[in-house]
Length: 380
Image (cartoon, rainbow, N blue to C red):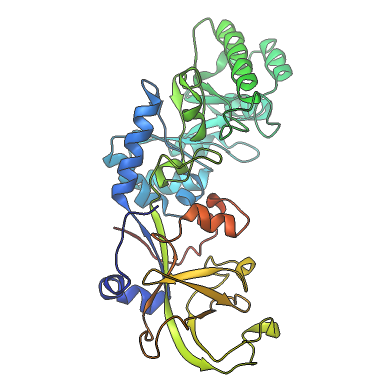
């Protein structure tokens, strides 16, 4: 659960201008990021930690989150693409920035210009990098150990062994990606580890020196010491997303979201609410319209079945979730007890992000990435 525990009215007083201008606001708890970093470090033992903060730091703002990570002592990060790398490089000149997907065809010149380290995912990437990398800059090689998404296959490795290209690469380390790391019982985790170790030996022999390797994402860190290898790549675990399947979260969630009451009305029995008249009131009710909808991060899946909280009271969503408005039943409160401008918890202390994602039939990653980029993300 979150540990911000800010009363709704305190939120309203301190951040009123944001609620007035945007209607809904997202808060990021810096202390919880620090706590999660400590847990990740303790689990990673002697392995180096290279945070993965792709997709604009899972929608939370890559510059702000990178600032926090640098304060915590991290010197290397992974980003999704070159555009993210260029943006971050403008702010952070000495940071090691690895790019997971360099686009097609790979543009060695732009990577070198902005001092970005490419992850080479294919034979084509390797050829483009060798041909365009006149200064012999470093790279990372991604190996496919069974996910069938990105990376060199075993046959690719054997083919490259016969060519000049692999000898011209200055490889910082080899990496692969676990398909089912959140489930420690999956035998496929060990199959992937064994393949990575096999491929690493082959490439190390070709290069005539040992090469470092990396397999762990956030969940992989919890699989055990043999998976840690030289480098681990945790990502959303810094934000407290549970790395374990169907187990208690060892981390602290960092993100909470709130909206504002826009209007309050008394509605009569047998009248309907919202588009399509999908719900008819069974009694006279007190309703509030709140300033959030599916364009902001509250999915239409929650129409007529989701809930929010005001002052720790659970309140039902009535009717369809609209683009930027949603109606809730506030009949649990007395008339005039609530007023326009009061703050509504979408997820936070009373409902975890993990639970909110389950209600949306999705995962926390998607919830965060789908939150409107224009909504203020405030670090508290």
